[in-house]
Image 1: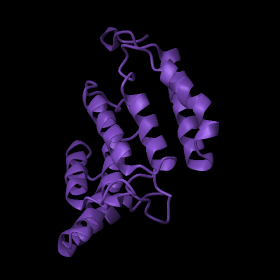
Image 2: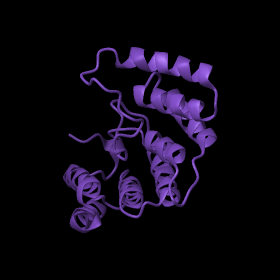
Image 3: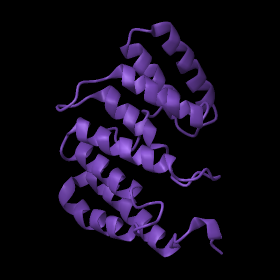
Image 4: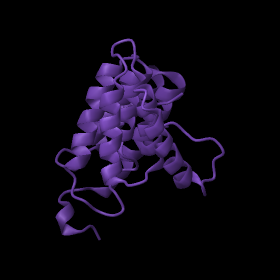
Length: 186
């Protein structure tokens, strides 16, 4: 049964929205905007008005399209900020209600820069540090903070974050250390 405090969350709508969102994000990464259009629209339509996903799913779609297709870092950062604010508005529950913290991708976009936005290591560091407040020792955010500190020339501090990242990843199944935002990185 769905807990009463979840309001009008319709699991069928959520499941459809999550499935379509995942397909659209994959299509943006692999093929660009045309194949993703139908799934993106279905994800928007499935994120029922009044549910906790109403703001989050469209912001995620906009961020991915802006970054992958339009190559617009400023637009992607604005959408990721909206996604972060939407997720912050969802009551704290365990496990978390979203599959990753969008702050990781916001920090990645701010640090990477694009044709429409200069890299901003100071803002990226602030974002990754804030994410570490919510998710202590999160390896992706530790990586992002280390990258931002290196970009700022604060090598000794970055080394400390890299050491913590190595500890966080020590039992992982991957050999290489992924970037702070696997969703948007190449």
